[in-house]
Image (cartoon, rainbow, N blue to C red; front, side, top):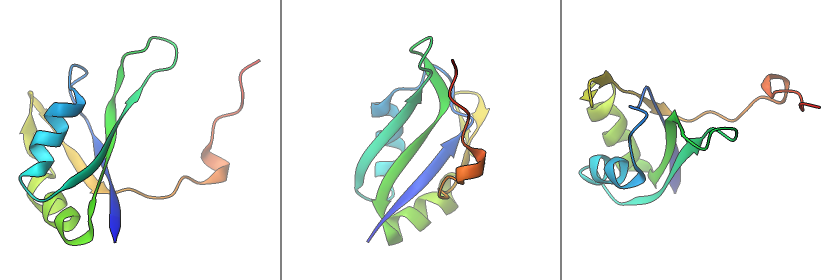
Length: 91
């Protein structure tokens, strides 16, 4: 079973390949989704990584709080987005 991991506080210069390399030390990485700002096209400083369940738990334990590019990563299991927390459409 695949598990989605939230990775926050990434340096804004981080690439998909860098994240994949970091997480692949703990298991097979199925996907990396670096979240981009829709207005500027630049990374927003967080991403989602999809891994097998056991590998995901190992990666979360090993990587949460480590220094990556001068920033302390926040790594935890991704939660479903609440409907009430979604932004309103801009007109």
